[in-house]
Image (cartoon, rainbow, N blue to C red; front, top):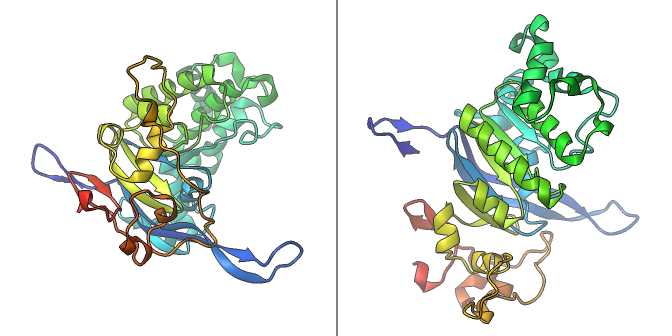
Length: 336
């Protein structure tokens, strides 16, 4: 929680406590025998404040999208709590969940699959008002749809067209218009630009930032593109094998990364600096492949690829520790 100038405590709009999501694993092809579990998310905790963006980054398969789907109750959690203004999303009744979803919306990764091809843009954007009819009187919905289209950079006449008539970037703008139709407090952005051309990504990111500034919406922004996360986020959480290994303010994470995995991840970020002064050894090449979430190593999940691994790393999993909001899960003496 943060303390305002008046001395009052500002509670987070969303608080995730020890989120766990395990999927049953099967014995192999053509069999349904359960042999183990896939530890997709294994104890994730973070808070989200009003109007801020928390970037969630990591390699493919680290559990980022599973966190998003579980928060939305598209997947049921194995354990943990997700408090939206103090109310646990995971134990909410169907009616309570409906009210929560009114204030917690999502932008999906694939703009081609997330829009119903049989519905006009007007029907797509106004669908949330069908589910929550008190949010917009029927007589005002047509005008509100056209206003939302203008707010996301599209034209009013686009309301009567169908999704196949639009480009990927335009479709994502339609998805954004639908997501903000109910004036939500939190948007879960699950890789919202990864399916778009690079030339369009910046436009959509800038649009999301403009909407956030205007409506004070908080974002959980999931991405694997570090440059996008750098531009978009206030704070960053780095995930590896279902766990957060480092979390802190954007500038702290990018300028003073502390976890070895974070350092390796940032070293792989493309750079336009081709000068002779750039260190050629700055790129960190990790050995081996990331372990399977169905068979993670004991202790620290990163120890098999870490150049700073110690004996203790094999026996106990480090917890997030630190100060001033910058925390890291590592046994390196530098961080103790």
